[in-house]
Image (tube, rainbow, N blue to C red; front, side, top):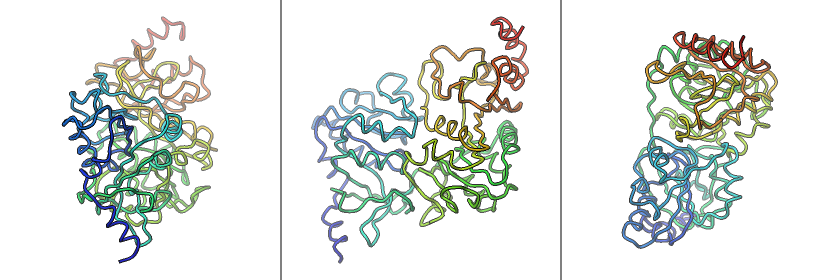
Length: 434
């Protein structure tokens, strides 16, 4: 048995063994979802419930459901700071039990630097290789930045976590304790695109030139856009999230990464999210570079690729072009994520275009997402001076370089027909249109 195997054996314990090292008042952190070691987190929660420790703070991004700190009785004992609300943590945030950070995704590591040391960092990794290295696999994000601040690092080894390439390795010498848990990582199944999704996806695809570099997420519009791009040539991928639709584009030959100015012949991502198909594709695949968020979402890095196409989702937009993508009025819903990072990067890219996609209405066509003013208290995710194209199922409103009057007309033209007369009235009432 080699020295790395001996070290592994010496550090191997259980999730409960790692939880026993946590002390009252510790500040902890984990990567999101597929990188979050549930057994360790819940074992810490068991200790909190037994009264053995208290005043624990847990930092995490988007999380999978089933955490101990989701219990209302944990408030004040095991507190959670969200860096992006998910379905499982949204209610806790809206109830005021969970605190949350306001940040663009590329700033996460910098903010951890500002907030001081992290006492305990826990994460899921792929099995150790013969050189003593673990791969972070499907999630890198802010993890490398947290590692720099962490006093103690613990890993949960999962044979189902894919081994990926890039700047995402941890050596056995950096790890204090190890536990093992072999179960499939979080598998997100996305429903088939709707008719509206196909319309929006086709509008965007029509504006994507051959050789463009792409960023888009997951969901109906992304799936529809992936299908619509199948006949394009020499596309590239530089994206925070790598998803099923991107695997499809690669396998059908539309993506080659040959025209990129940087990271040529490689797709670039910071986390992968989707079905088992995605995780199987990225495993031991050198054509994908999994890199830290401070590189992947740096607008100046994004802009180095010509014809950069960015696609993100919005909840509402007003006549000025202000976009809210993270709250419903003053009620928190998700987070800023990397939307602004890519809007800015695409703006600086030669030939780049950013799109904010949204259905024209919400709540069964009872609410227009295009409004004279954002809902009271709504968070502005993309600033009016940075927004480029808004897309609904009724078309594309290109706002960059347009006056407020021109923007208002363009937005009304892509609003749902039942709201256009009302929006026109509001525009005249405000002397935007006369």
